[in-house]
Length: 631
Image (tube, rainbow, N blue to C red; front, side, top):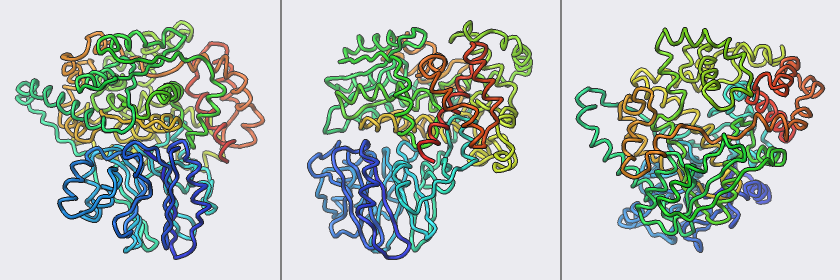
């Protein structure tokens, strides 16, 4: 695992070693073990290395035998042992035991098709000295990040995190108003956008080719689901599907155990993390180290579920109770994120990563299970929305649910009913995003200043904006459930869930591997009919039936709670003064983006307990802190 960065000049010219070194140093947390830099005629590559495989010789950037191909690599190629044997048989000579060297020789052997050979998580930069060409490549699901920009003189600047690019004098820090609008709507910024107008994320499953000053992006992998929806297939193949799924899960965990340093697993006690721990036990991992986080506020505490798995599989377990450190953490974590990000679960993810890093260098995590197996409540909501009678009923009771004070709702049925009925007010064209929107169109029209509205242009629902509009066009060939999963797999997963996991674990120099996002497993699950994933209103049905052979039923069929924090309370107590300082009238008016009266009303109602505006206020607060740090 590493952080990478680089510069490619459009014309021959000196590339500053000092500048590349400074760019690398911003990524120190991603690779504290060593720094490497190589400078060629027109290109410079930098890498910060977290040593996992071949600790002694795996220095980066790394080249082929004659120095004509160079690579800086962030991630892991899990099938590199078999690729290495194939390449050695073809005459290639290896000097290390690293997966990174496999990338170089694969490019020599197979050209641009080489990336299709890889099974893993990766973001790498490959320089072809003969062609004077740079390739930037990102893994299929977007597990590892990669940012890039072209300067005015057409030089290419890239890196694992935005902060490394921002050090280059040719990179502008211009706010992207459309990205800000998307952030306030969804709490994350979807690829290829970033909060900076001229900087972009390389989308998952794509590579960027830069040659002779020209940039081209090509997609090398795209999920092309073709589920067998025949009645005969559904009935006949259930036992076979369970066997194949179990086999793929076990293989996916197995290939992610390859490491020259200690590893462990996050354990929440839900089916995703419990499956990974159970399969590690089956595969003979010893000692089997697990890590859990709990909360003082009991309604958020899941430790009893994790302890059941600990007892069953006799793991060497560490628990951490999260106590309010909200102010210090908020300031620290926003710096690690580089752009506004509203997902509250950055806090527990950061803290459990911090605890785990004291014991291991590599962790296995259950992220991705909800998008692959259909685990979110918004899939249930979307299914319910197809009933006209129920839709009408839920729309009707929304005003009544509004009158129930937040203190009475807690995390129970009233809160879920309110959120469900609230989503029915949004456009049906939004599909399940109806339940994932935090600032609807009408609220944003009241929030945004006249000048900001002018800058954004015509206000539109997200299904009319890129990248969502092109995703919506691809849904006709999918059944109703798989269509919803497809949307999340191409938006919420890479741009929210995986961003959170990557930044918070790497902030602690911890490599996180996600077995449930192995691309072979994902392709298999998208051949499975949707009604075997969401059966009735039972989420993850096929996955749950498959894991009955290994896990306690209490863990398989427990209600979904999510990995969150009591942010509602934090904003009233620990973060109250911090929020009031950043969301004050003077500051809001000076920046000219938002209308203060709506913000004032939300703050007053939230602090008085009349309404829960934690999502809206947190997003505005995060943006204000980010803006002060980065603009």
